[in-house]
Image (cartoon, rainbow, N blue to C red):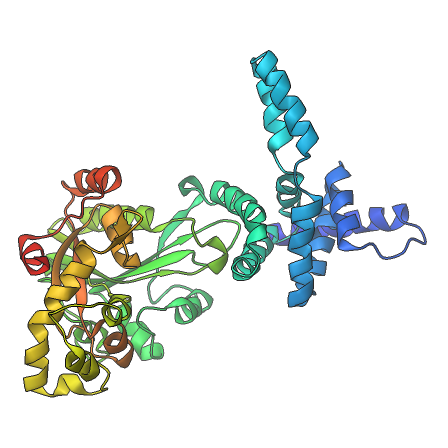
Length: 430
């Protein structure tokens, strides 16, 4: 008997279910997607349920933007919990707060659309379809805040399905299948990969690349990190991205620098993998290379210039702001020297003191500080690419992960909003 993949088996179950459905719906008209959803919720047979789920996925994939919007509104209005049932269950629990009434209340408050989404997941490649649905929903949400509850249900379920226990860490190297390597080209958003020579250099002996995968999305990285093994802390990105630079000896490296971290699936936004990824990669690297003493990042500061433009500060006047708008100002040594000190001070203030809802306004800072890292140093002209000059006046920052301090820094950040930073960076921020 020839070998069949899991997806082929699932497709055959769906095909069998489709035959059953066809016999059941003799001479019936084409069902609308609401009817399909209600049929799926009432279906008990596995083959029929799988076939219905596949029909819903195919119907959704054929929709234009307006019809997708209507689909999510349908989930909001027709598949929400019944208010009367919730009130009745709440009254019963109030009168007799025991496990049975609590269970009845839990069932009453769960929206039927959660079970619907679970059953859609039975379709072949159903998990990928649900991730794609949430990607569309997140795009609609700013214009349709009434869909927040629907989005919360998608996120709740995906958070359960993509918890750390299901994730698989894999090292990506030059022998990884080309289809996966091509995904890196697509998803690399920090430092664009400039062709296959660039890819080869990023996977050389003094480089590492690790990614999380999920069994339901074969070949699709969820998040990946690129690492350089060096003999000192990196202070500029261009040398790390130099395709012609010769690989160094990885067995003599003392420092692992994380220089690019990329979330790959827009439909999984808000479901954090980064903390687990960095923690496990540090563990893997420390085990394979016991001579590594420092684990750090070389990170962008994407929101600095936008924050600076709105700031009223005596450290930088309008002439200074106007200079930053000129494309090649950094090539003029005199002008660059005049801006260096005020910009470094303002950047330190931005990273340490500027907060929103108790957290740093910079998203990369929130990520690394929340993971227990420390702001180590701000690097002048660390990235002179047009994008980096526009976003951060060419500056980048090192966040350092000290294994003995990670938990302490994380707890201080979460409980008190404390930003761990070196004495040099704190002095700049004053």
